[in-house]
Image 1 (cartoon, helix red, strand yellow):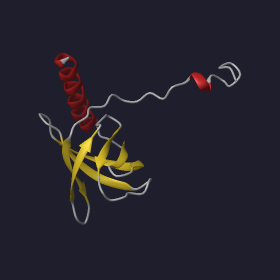
Image 2 (image 1 turned 90 degrees about the horizontal axis):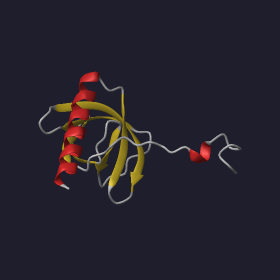
Image 3 (image 1 turned 90 degrees about the vertical axis):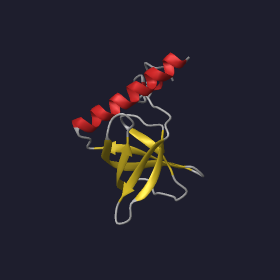
Length: 117
């Protein structure tokens, strides 16, 4: 199939938001709050280190401690699992202020990583 015959679908690529490795510390809030280690942080989601399985589609409230910024609270939904490591979440209904804190953290970390090369 050529790109013209499939409507260009084969030539489309999913764009991922820039990610920073971390780790970042945080918490999963609920009846019992649980400490988290967070990796691959972006404006759209992150990878949460966990030795407990979490079903895809599970909604949760998390807090992430952002160095040189603030602690942000986000609603998140699990989107996939990474066996023997954890699960990925996408962020939902983010406030503009939280978005600014995340963007500054990601930008600062990416800038530092590029200047270190």
